[in-house]
Length: 149
Image (cartoon, rainbow, N blue to C red; front, side, top):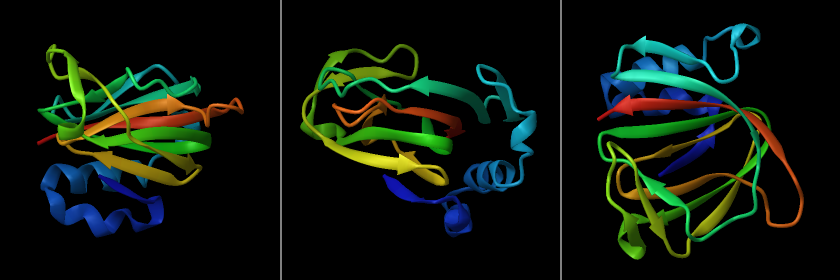
């Protein structure tokens, strides 16, 4: 798992060519031209993203997700969002992978992301996006980038 500011995205270009392409693209986008709910392809199915406008929900230990084929880059364009994170091996799987998402339950760590923050989730990183702090409502506008591993 990586948690950082978008201005440091260049530090992660060496992970793979797909990561380099993803970060170069999302740091040079004209954000005013993006439409929530729409999928944008960078390199076909290997690197693509969705724009999501989210009313964050209360944390729920039953809704961690994990992926095998893709890493997620979740980049906050505006607002605030909390994301849960846990090492996959500390959770209990509750649903099998269909096709690249499985669901888990258990305890993790909640992390706050604000405008300009991003997180990268690898296959061993279960995550619970779109959450608030359990007390205060929050909204976010974000990119969810899928990077084929």
